[in-house]
Length: 295
Image (cartoon, rainbow, N blue to C red; front, side):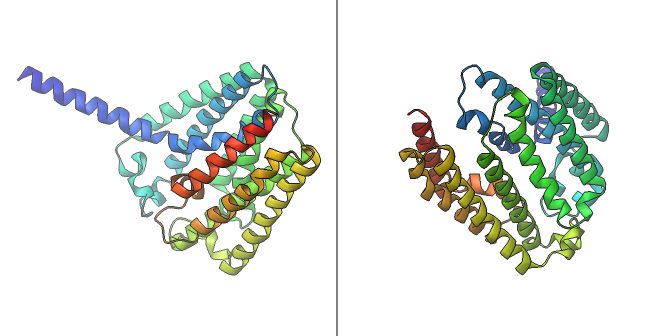
């Protein structure tokens, strides 16, 4: 009888830890690859560990932001077809527990960022301010809401460059900026397909599907062209870098195509990484990129 009670307690504890872990949304940590872009394209000795730690700091802070948003949006999330299953919205994690996790992540992430560099800590604070402002105001303003999402990706790039004292090509910054906008606009299109403008994403009422289509097309093409210019001017038409061009084009096309499919998700990055063809194409791109950098 005692053993049975202990087993029930253990299951309860494991379930609790599972829900707290889900609260972090670790799958979204894949976006930290933007933090590593600076080092990947400028593999300077001695910067790998700082870049990796900067990525970890950003992951912790982004998880804190997700928890904050989940606390603030828990009422709306209960109306969302998928977000209603999140720990706070479903009631599997209490608001008090979520607040404790929030402050623990903030303290750890900001301390780690400060230990790496003051600039990184400032970038992390800017990310926090933008996201809090987004949750309370900017998410209701069309275009500005997309710029806030894109800013999150750009700040990741800056965290892995300026934040650790690593130089970066202006062409790569422009490419990353356009790619960030491309991702943000595709996210809005996916939300429209899920019909969220009547419930949890009212700003979508101000977006026209045709306008979104053309914005995605123009910005997608622009990000591809700036990447080509980066190869030509910053990489002196490196042979292996030139080989990455078709894979970059396929990735952009596949990303945009997946965002138009009848899927039950509103995060284009997660959908893209879950697609087998996209993963194969991405691996080819990454391998060729490292071969180019190893020259």
